[in-house]
Image (cartoon, rainbow, N blue to C red; front, top):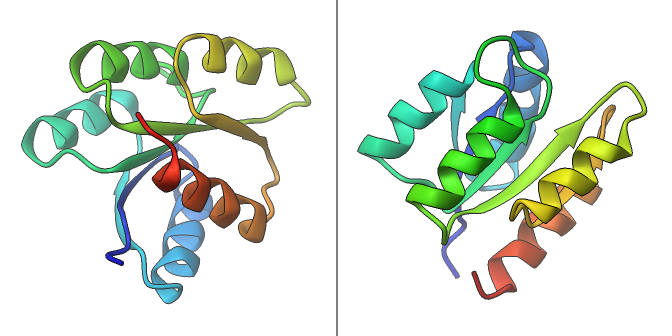
Length: 123
């Protein structure tokens, strides 16, 4: 089975670079964006299968990006990353169509489980 094309969207450059490297080592095809506008531009030119999306970003925030993804490309699965102990954003994101969410700091194995579950889930 082909590994999914994943877009990681997070304004924390070191975090997203490390996460990208760890997922690439596990065979995933990874692309990175550091803000919501860049993420939307990448999706216009090359839509991913899955988006791993930080909720708290300057400018176009994660929930706004999620709304745009679900209105323009509803079959793309979105996994939200929330921080600062806020499950409310994750729950709101799921109400808006996200597949699931994880609290930061994330456990890479848990993220991979959610990625694999999103692949098997009908959009």
